[in-house]
Amino acid sequence: MTTAEHELPVGPAQAELAARLHALDEQPLAERADGYVQLHDEMRDRLEGGDAAGTQA
Image 1: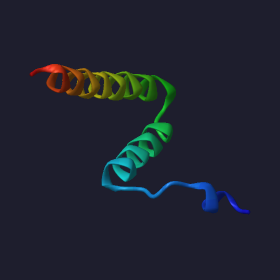
Image 2: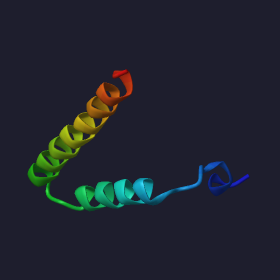
Image 3: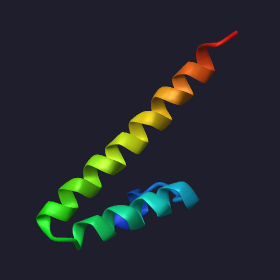
Image 4: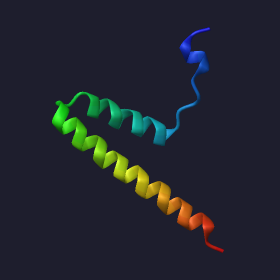
């Protein structure tokens, strides 16, 4: 089996994240670190916002 046979289908959100990660990996280390911090903060805000919306009655 090849790696492709084990991969899950990729939707638009996953493709966008993969593109952002690839772009970050191409940057110099200092810029890359800042980019990862920004991405982390965005993802945390989305996850925490989703939890709050899901727990309201």
